[in-house]
Length: 129
Image (cartoon, rainbow, N blue to C red; front, side, top):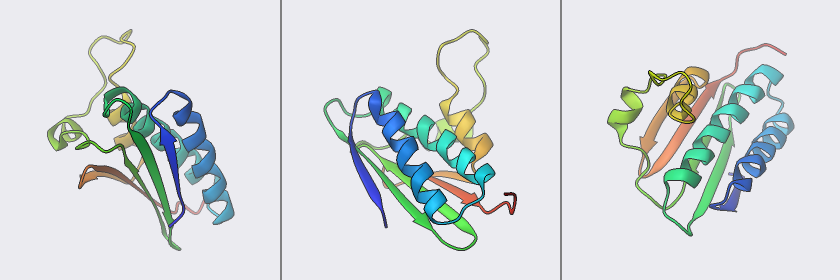
């Protein structure tokens, strides 16, 4: 399973996005699905940078099967509380600077779950090019 290890700094978001884009393209995924995966991993890594253990490392793992693409993002912490994931919604204050990451992940991925401290994002092939 290809993976990338990143420092818990803001530039990790762009590096994770580039990694997922390259791996998904190499695996032959449609552009629409690659775009969804890049957006979701960017949000997951951004959350790891902001909320994960200070000074830790962020790991992004990529797995592709014929009909599904799975990404795992870990930061050495426990991951988000599953109840936050279940209740993810847009913030009431539309001008708030944060609070959209889990909602965006749930909107663009076919499955989002927390497993052993990892945020797991799963995408089903859409068939669109």
